[in-house]
Image (cartoon, rainbow, N blue to C red):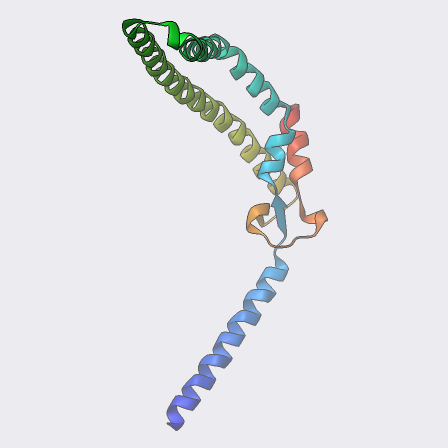
Length: 173
């Protein structure tokens, strides 16, 4: 029993020593914090990307919007004029609406997938520029560690290099 108590005390002292040593080592490190979400929102490249994608997929969006209008028109026509239509006319209109809806779903899904793929591709290029800027600033300012703001509970405002990154990346391209 006495051995257990001594062993527990020795482990406690060792753990305390490691904690103290790690806090002393952390005190010697120069640490910066960066907010990637804020950077992406402030970069002119992000706004330009959104505009390019809007133009790139404009024609596809027009087709999707027209399909939505057509579906709505035929549904309203069926509701409005259904009591005056023959059974065959109602069935034909139902089939037309179903066909348009299927086309709408297929084209809408394809557009969503293409747009998402292109956005990811272009966003990855911007992220690469951001990472280069972070690395460059960290080297220039002699930071030992750069953490994402989302991973940090608290940091002093002067530890943030977010604005420096925004400035550096904004000057590119």
